[in-house]
Length: 410
Image 1 (tube, rainbow, N blue to C red):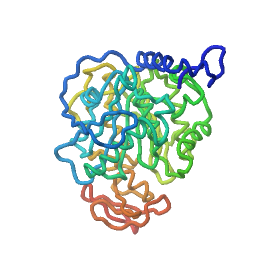
Image 2: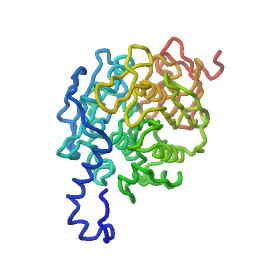
Image 3: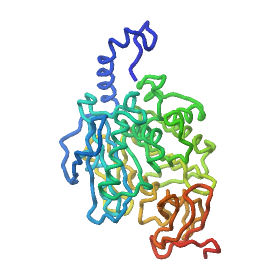
Image 4: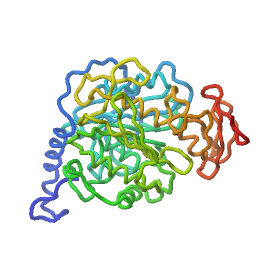
């Protein structure tokens, strides 16, 4: 959303005449703030361009990373790069492809261009691109449709994450298509529709303080006919970020806890990773982690990575805005329920049994849904309707094989 001209009210004819120039200036300033120069990427990750995925009103490009061991009906993760970056840079440095290989999910990288935005930012601040059914938001939605029809991905296990402008666009996708995305992770991004009545500069720094209910209403207004359930949301940021300041993480927390009907006080707080990242989790009534906030100490703006071969390591520092710290992509995959090394599937339990609604079991990756019914993964036992009102206990034995254990789970 462009800035109003001095001495004019928003929407006046003078503003309209200068709108194209303002958008160009805004894009350049946002690029300088949201990212920096990127060196030539070493194309270590092989991406496949998909040219025909829909009408593509946002003029984006779709790339896919398909692991060699991809199972039938895999989950899909959509990844959104930052300004001046591209799909290849994000694939080479975020660590997501390594996790896709290990955990068996399809990766879709959306890419914008300088034709859309002079500095290759996703246009999260423009109403023509951050609304359901139009622009870049619809293009990304169409990429998900292609992943399902062209690659056999599971439409019930679709996730999205992104950095900076891509993080802000992640919030756009969760708000505008809550019926498509089960969960998302916003890295150094902003709450949805902050630019409804504020400039992007103000939203980024010093940030905008609204009540949780006001933030939540902006998401509800994105799709007024939608009644839930809402996507699970993780928020990541560096506590030294001066580009998109930490207040935005607090406002994102307020927006999504309010949508889930939760208080803004965390249910539990732990330290994770090699740098003692503070992880605050907000639990739904069934024990599912509905919202999570991860505060990474000692870093500024970027996607935290931890290069190495350890289970919890991933990523590369081969481009700007990938600071060495914690492998955020590992923890994001775990939050999504995709981490095959975590028997809890990101659902918040360390036991071999989980009692939760059918909806929560599907979101955690312990069950699937078809034709409105829910089925335990592995055993394919029918658990009943796919909603938040039917609850079952699932037992995992062996790994990845779930059975209904409502009568007891030793």
